[in-house]
Length: 316
Image: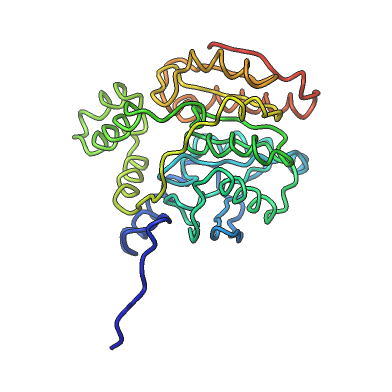
């Protein structure tokens, strides 16, 4: 029997093995079932691999022609993380949720794309393949870096950008990585301890069985092969002219919310910045009704007003 000479690339994300991948996909599907039902799924080809896309709503046929929402998830997992948001968003607009190649979703990663220009090229190619000429782009955490980077490098098709407790504003510090590690460890804690740990860590999803299983399965199944992104420079942020809405958790460990509350609107003309109380890194998960309503209101403003009129600073 000839020797298998296939080599695993060290610069693209990968699953450990098929068994763990399939177990993770089953956990993903249980989380997807908690959100809006996907109208369809499709795969689009880019120069960096195949991107898997979920299409939602809208429930009102009259809203089908409205500018769609495109969702970019955080690092390590997939677009199942949007389960608290897809029902409200797809009730008003078409919604597309992309699995980022290099993370634990159903996309297939073939070429590295962690470099800023390549990351923007991937997203531009994916949107082009979907036939989307104008979109409201929403990103969380690492997805927040992706959407800010897109607004800087390839803003042509962007109606607006919403960045949820995003990367890209500050260098990722040790406190954030420690929080991620401790949160993963806490997901394995005895059932009686989980509510207390969830409150202490600002991670209420630890107490949700489907989400806890999903988090654990993803940690076992997938290996990310990219460095943490560097923040955008102040000159890069100043270049952004796309209407921008930044929502941060008051107890975020990824950014310093009060610092960014002042900094973002100062650097980016017309940008909105907001802090959501009683939450950490996941405001759209911890307080979906509030954040969904405010995102939809922002998009409505952008669609109906001159972009120069969309701005302000809010500390909630």
